[in-house]
Image 1 (cartoon, one colour):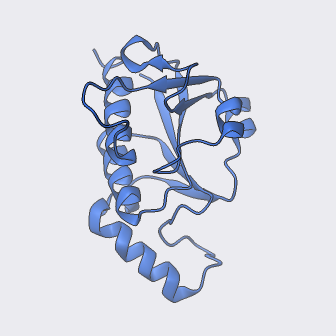
Image 2 (cartoon, rainbow, N blue to C red; image 1 turned 30 degrees about the horizontal axis):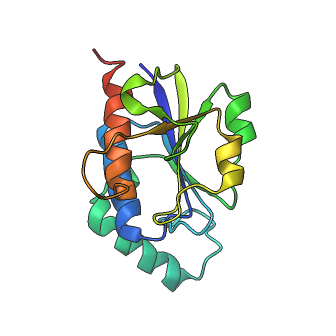
Length: 165
């Protein structure tokens, strides 16, 4: 089975963060790294003002429904991709790009860190360049992309499923 870590970088919406937690819990994701301006639930030693931390935690809980208490997570200002690579993870960006491999054609490694980017603009060029691989979800409608939490669910379903069969 593939061990999957999710990295949610610069996600604006607490509802998306909550949905990502819920999806992660459902598929047995080992950890979520929340980075950049991504909102995150309260942490021990939280440096945010208590009322801000409590407000964001409550908002995330509305869609996570307790998954935020079950899935290990941490906050990093900038995702430490080098530390993940040194721990044996392959960094895989979920992004539409000329380098992207279509999700059904991607062979997942044993340890994978799935990097998710900002809702509107996706991953920055420097984060794309830091990825070992880029994967893309095939689309058949007229819209250009899926919501980040929906895309996470589709990608994690596929990556988890192919190693459970």
